[in-house]
Image (cartoon, rainbow, N blue to C red; front, side, top):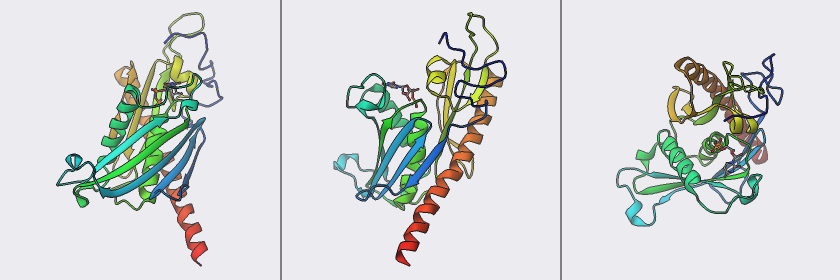
Length: 253
Ligand code: UDP
């Protein structure tokens, strides 16, 4: 999209001062809700997300049951107050799409064969949205599933990369810069966004979407950056779980 904002300067500094391969600040806390089987609170830049996991439990209504495996129901919801223009409450096309792709990504790592006829509910609530909420939501869901003790092959993690600055202030088209983890203005006025989710142990791709246009070289560069971002955030997920369980052990002792 064209904009009057210069998203990246001649020195490669972005609007918020980040370099092209720098993530926004990420903070993760596991086990924040007492009534959920597993939960997570995550801040990623200006995004604030809480995830509650329930299950595995018998899938109801019964026609939703799969006799061979569990179903993972991720429900992504943006709070009405999470965006600048109040969002109409309830599901819309976008939140249904995000719920579907996150459910499919999580089903690739959860050992669903262990729980025939069961459902695992993953409620993702976006309290504050500032671009990259699907990756933030999926990352928090990975921690909440682990916190619930649900067996998984790996803790899934998401991160995006994208392209900004192809169109400069005076309307000239320059090459554009491939950057990690788009911020809000970069998402709104940038040229492409490539959110991915992976299983960091194997680098298996669990989710890959793309908005905008990238050349093959730009795509490869964006994938490389997003993969690196995923691995960095994966460490923070593990730290959050270790912190929670270390605190639990201390309490017992
Ligand atoms: N957004 C908004 N209103 C909406 C949907 C999105 O203001 O109804 C904003 C929000 O900040 C979101 C960003 O647009 O994070 C980018 O949305 P996108 O659909 O690209 O998904 P995301 O990057 O959050 O995964």
